[in-house]
Image 1 (cartoon, helix red, strand yellow):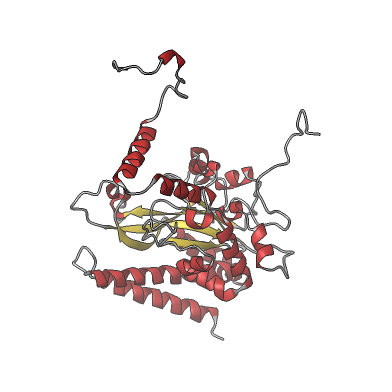
Image 2 (cartoon, one colour):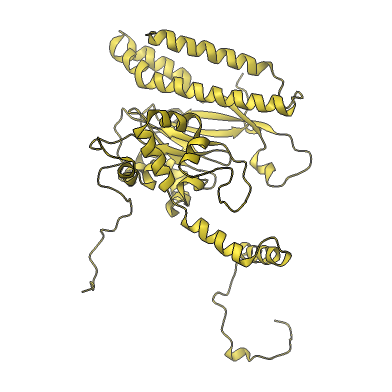
Length: 235
Length: 149
């Protein structure tokens, strides 16, 4: 560090948390601080925007599927006019954040599973994901492990998620890439005959909407919380 | 109630008609104005929807019935589905910029067509161990594609 006037004692200042910082982190800090300095947005705006993006989730998409299961007209709308159907579950693709951030993104499609066709989405190039309606992508979705292998060995990768599909069900791997976004509309499972929209939405988990799981009665999350017992369990 | 043959034949005729209309142009490359391009975009979207619905009907009802009820049905169905699925170019997608150009925003960019391509995985990958009806669908900008003949 070059010479500077001291009003602090280097031996007693806090050491940096990391010794290295990536170029992208530096770029982000620089651009953000410049925007705040120039008045493009305030620090408070930035905090609220960040918190908004952290809390989006798959609930709108789950309700879209549940509603489609219950109402054939809505299902048809979802397949032919996905933008309109999205709006009806509270997601406006042209105004995705409500913060006035622009979007002209309209290449969104809903993939309907049939008894002989199962869809699963991936972005082999990066990790494109229909965030406005599905929330943030899970960590595994962004890994090369998933992205590279799903397009080559789809049945094996799905088996790793515990999904085994019979031979008479064809798999269609839908690569999202930069222009197109997709979500899956899975088949309605047995045992849900007189369920209402909320009950149905509860079993349409994020993994079902990606296509690595099927909706099951009683399964409302794909997170595994039943692991090895604790060494020192809380009493 | 029209027979499935009538419905499918009608769909095929309709798709052919829409494709013929699209082929006439004009396109962005041949000087179409914004309104014409917007109309083309809507036509293409409608075509994609119609083709997808048609395909769903075929896959769910028609081919399984052919397989089980027509003598030689399995061969016929395999042949037809094989023809449909070999590295199939479904439809040109919208006039868009290829992503490698879009990021840099140079002044003289021309949009290009994106093609939705559906690969049959057992043909795409050597030693594929899944079924021969598994597919991969993706979008490829025109610059990466070359006509076969």
